[in-house]
Figure 1 (cartoon, rainbow, N blue to C red):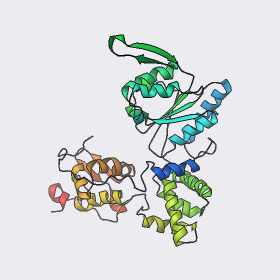
Figure 2 (tube, rainbow, N blue to C red):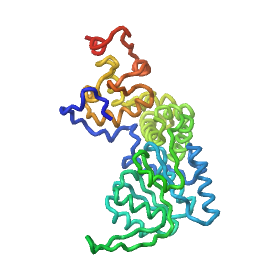
Figure 3 (cartoon, rainbow, N blue to C red):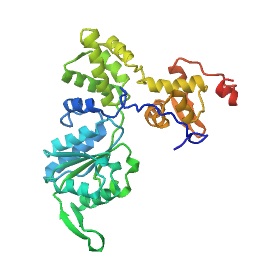
Figure 4 (cartoon, helix red, strand yellow):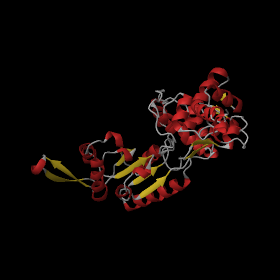
Length: 361
């Protein structure tokens, strides 16, 4: 939604795409390689998501007892919370192979038909970012999920013929970061739906201790707590910060991570005590120092920090809003009292109103 009271501006900056942020919840090439070694292999080893884990355990145990394939599973939630890991655990618990693909990779119904027709009985098909699948493929998936059958169209025009193709029973695990974009007919075909929540600091500490053991890194309780507190409630970020702190400890210290080492390392990488990085602080700093805490339009704020409008809205704002540091209003972005306190600034007097209070003129 466009919250900028002045409307979109055409003179937007062309700032860099921030795909290398240390606190980015999306996986990069290095994360993908390391996560394979750090992923838990069964539900008992999986940390956090207690409700989803308990419910999923019942679904899988019941399916094994019946000797049947598990119901289709939909997992929703922010990136980095364990959706891919749970899909692999589902396959392992069902003693079945897993096929991994993504919604953007399936742009035609034929792409999906080729995948479905090659599945083995009981196989798990993991479809990441399922909401980004093309509409023709989506409609084909309805029948495949419900009747284990697809109709392959041969030919074009009036002479086209639909050939029914029977599929072996399989389990579809769909993952999405935007469950609201899934059409109701698709959502209704999933037998189990689980929403992944952000992790509490105590849960992240358990994740960090486990990862440290696998990485053969010494870490004490306070060191793990310091990293967990800056991980934005996301295991992927916790593991990434742990690896960077490990590097610092190996070069600058004895190789063991304590609270002082963790604080010094994350200061180097510009991740503060609440998990804010350079971009987050730049957005807050501009909002507070240049615009008196707002309200200010999104495009104006983006120009002030030298980033693209989409970068500020989609990369920086979600976490700032979730942390209660920034609010979106119909008039624009507004800083909260917590934002002033976090940056150590004093808010302007409440008596100043309008343009004078807004811009300090």
